[in-house]
Image (cartoon, rainbow, N blue to C red; front, side, top):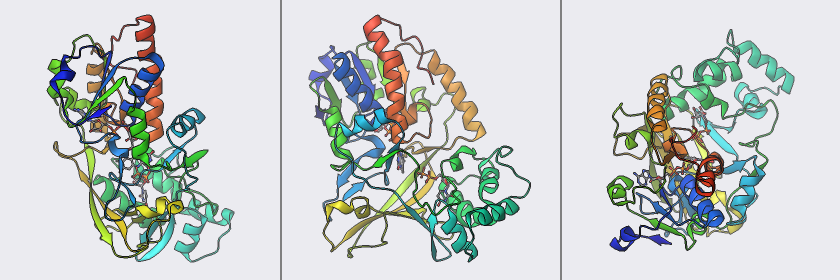
Length: 402
Ligand code: FAD
Ligand code: UDP
């Protein structure tokens, strides 16, 4: 049951067995597991006016097209358990994600593959020839010796391709020197010496055929789950029953009132436009590699669901801009420089001293989680900590195993 406001009646109901702060994938997975598997009564407190966290979607009233409010969310995973779990809420389509990128006015395929390499160098290299070329362009740096994003990218694709497709985009997206950024950001993108242009390599991929919003509605639709929207956890915390376990999925530094300093996050601004055409860019996501173009990418949501036969008179697009988050902004991506890593470690130690509170999710554990990773981490927390607590009285004497 989802409510819009906090009602006194709820706060006198001290019969909740579990409180979850945050109704994103992590929080709702915990609530759903607790209610369906252990029959627990769960109170979910959500600051925003909707459930689903950053994966929330709506049907845009002007076009009838499902828009992903916080940017395109592509589902992919290797875990059959997670795939089946989500398919239990709605079937998934067989959508396969492909991304294009524009550099100096020309369109290339991303992630970098044999086609990208050949069109960039104006050649028809074989796979082996392309590998030999990249090897000659990576200079001294080897993948194993690469310690930051720039070194890793150059080791993987050589300097010319790095400068064309990665440096400008990364500068816009992170506003941090690529030599300060962790190498694993770039390892998210495969590099292929084949003509495979798929964005993801995972076993399972697709989009919820009834929309992300339907998944969240169905996850929360249980008589034992009460969701309170527009409610900040910290405002109602004093009214909650002291002994009830809490799963906290908001920002970890906020939990400790920023007492050690603020962790760096990036936030995004989306500029929404309804364009009077049946097709604006011919694809769902077009990246813009050059620094002179202020946005990082344009999303055109109609292409996420070709099976829906949307009207052809107009289309909805989002231009995505990235910048550092202030305290009032939505934190989207942990920046994770060395300074952040140290600060997070200090917060993690504080969290380990908390009793009856478990930290989870992207914000609570300061991790660059994809949706399947958030769900997988919630399963783990439920199995390892919450279920043993409720069924075997195992104490919740630290903030979680993260
Ligand atoms: P969130 O979704 O952030 O949910 C946390 C919730 O807690 C929020 O609703 C927030 O309002 C609430 N909250 C915070 N503080 C409080 C408080 N004090 N009181 C009450 N509530 C609070 N993943 C993919 O798998 N594929 C993709 O293509 C993809 N694309 C992405 C694109 C963008 C632009 C972004 C930002 C993320 C993308 N992700 C993608 C990642 C995906 O959004 C996350 O993995 C997922 O949302 C994590 O769920 P979560 O519950 O941990 O966090
Ligand atoms: N990236 C890039 N150029 C692109 C796409 C990605 O330089 O056209 C880099 C950028 O640093 C980005 C990282 O690769 O942060 C990971 O890309 P991904 O698409 O996974 O980013 P996300 O989905 O998190 O926005």
